[in-house]
Image 1 (spheres, rainbow, N blue to C red):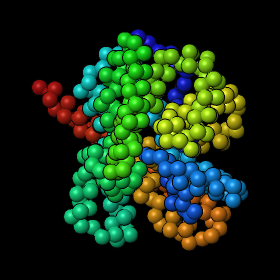
Image 2 (image 1 turned 30 degrees about the horizontal axis):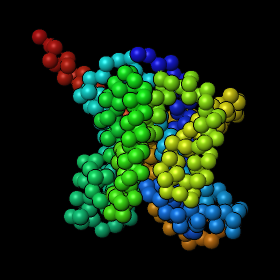
Image 3 (image 1 turned 135 degrees about the horizontal axis):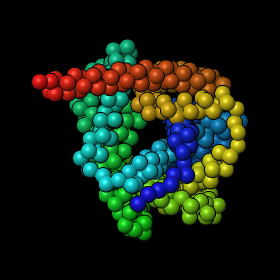
Length: 370
């Protein structure tokens, strides 16, 4: 079964760029006063009220408020692109499960390892944070990708790292989900619906013990599955995208006031984003902006890996200032530092794979020699 991709590699790169810029701005600004809170893993009406009241009382600070409160939706773009991209790549092949998982893990762990080592140097050597046996356990728990399964441990060491555990869970499920899609789309949609029902029924109770279903694959399965379905059914979906988007706007508005609509907000955001993106992609943008966006999308994997621990000390400096302009200046410094460290991380990864490739080639030549 084949799929003709509507989103090109350039499109997915641009979407990654938008996603990572939303994420890093959110992960910085939501720690800057006034800290509004955000409904990312569980719903709290107080956070919604904080956001609305802040917009009313200080409308000139709307950009910081929007990014701090809702910038986390950028993560949904990565989840969607993961499901979509994997489907486009593997739709016409028979997946060898072990080979598939090994390939995904092999791609993930080098950068994850470099990021963890960078975190260790940055936090415990440069900034001299106390290092003890508990921290060692935290490193092991995070590196094993099991932290998401332990209540109160999902954000140990570095908050954004929770994503690695969750995305690997989705990778483990992908071959099964793709096979179901090849047989019948309605069966795959039923799984997404079942995931939503599970969230509706259990997430509030589990969140009370710090074990939100959005820490793991269940909460993000509908968006991931939508990416798979979109790769096959984009013509049908796009035909009705305007009507879906009207519903999505209503869902996003109601999600501010009601927990059950909030459970649908990730999918609603994604559908609305697709409508806007497909409209604006028709336009010609300035070449410098296009180059920057494509560069950012290509670097997004590395930016995500290192940006979390690089927020120090810039958040502290920003919170000592009452000027919103200074908040944005420190955000800019943080972004520049993050880009530089991400580039270094990418080069270290390239060196690693170059060494591995040379070793395998040398080993192969040795084995084949008479």
